[in-house]
Length: 432
Image 1: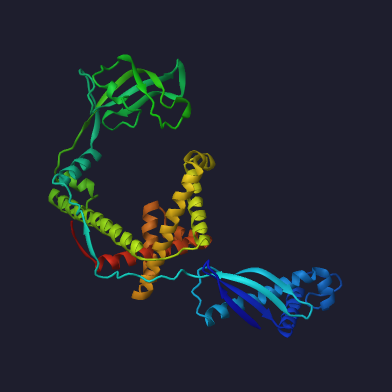
Image 2: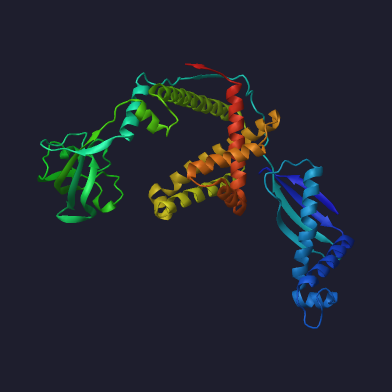
């Protein structure tokens, strides 16, 4: 058995393989015995049919495929190990032939991890615009809590204002025709936080209960329904009811409600908010520093990424986008057509190359610094995911068992987080 290796310009190693006749014959005989164990051949018990009968029943080519499966994986593993090949894919078989003299010739190829030299990544001087929580951050958090536990109460004897909730009936028209899905009865609209067409909520301010009126609006140019994009519209409105938000007092009773008994006093609640704000501030500054660090590492690392790697990453990104579109009930192919093929392809290839380079840099740093993903890291990540999606860790484990790629993705996320923390811990971060 012999294997000749040749590296090409695409960062691939080509394998020229020759297996001698004796080894092929031994593998072929063993394959015949294996095949005869599980095929039903009339007149013979399983495993007892002569080789010629087995060949006639299943075909020589079928047995030869079994021979390839028996010989090549082990050969590939030994070749990669003995030649210290840093591969990123499993070898792929391009050609094989069982020769007349009984030997086997084959050609295969395997992709190598791109070679590169990391710049200095420890002790980096990183200057960022430091994020500081605004002085009224505490007040805004408390106000948000009070709004969360507020009540809506009916009001009488006054017109609506821009902070009210109004119960309305409405019907919309474009060019005199009713808008599909543009009507409702008893709809409660928050005038302060409306997601309706710009200008809609503003025209409901200063109206009396029971009043009926018409408003004029213009649909945005990017509106999801192409038929009415940029069109002028008319809405007939009836205002049924006005409600205002009544905020609770900031006291110990409210604090107990917020934490389900976790906070006994307002001061304890405020201390928790302070801790949260400080953690948020640090997280934002870590994020800004991380961007600077990786941008610098990418800029200072010379690395040639082969097209095959980029194509696979683009394919994975496309699958992610397709799944996301389908979950949102959108037609993926129509979205791609609308985005523009060539521009989108160029953008995705650039993003794919950036992702690959970042992953390779992370992997290299992890290897040099002995950073590993431990079982506890995986358990912690699964607990985090289960809380995020409101499911049990057991369900996450079940999902991973059904899709091994999820486990690989999970490990990549964890490794990325651990390496990023290492880089942040070893950087000199200061304000611009």
